[in-house]
Length: 196
Image (cartoon, rainbow, N blue to C red):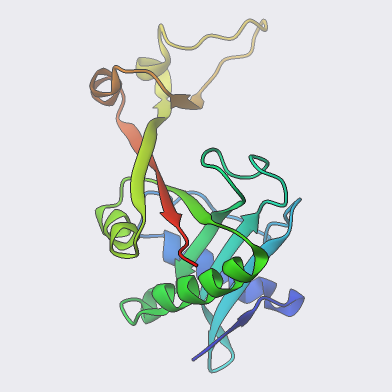
């Protein structure tokens, strides 16, 4: 297996690897048809085996504080995507991608990584095992159907009726929100300080 920089010809393999790796996670419906292009510089790595993209890691990073990351001091990098194809998981590919990204980040003068993820226990454990700290969270709430929408959301446009709503809850009544709606995910911020 080889870890290398992403190339434009990798896009189809990148999209497939990400889609398949997200199927068994809380992000199962977060499907992309194209790889994102970032406004700031990025560390974009892929893991390749037998000409197949089996892992990926995208980190958009700051050249000016607080333009990409939501917290911390100094220049940081936001992990937007990290994924390993299901047939290649549990082989240390994610860790190898992260280690390679850390080396590049230090050369670029970054002092930390930030990553947001949902409440998949195995993903949370990977971040902790990889040296990240759990620093904050909020809820992502999917409000679906008349029963859940009633009294919560209404349109101010005549004849426009919401059917599904995706919302962020940043208040202190998280348990009440979790009890009120069927699909609620805690979205957790992890931060890792990069040692020089």
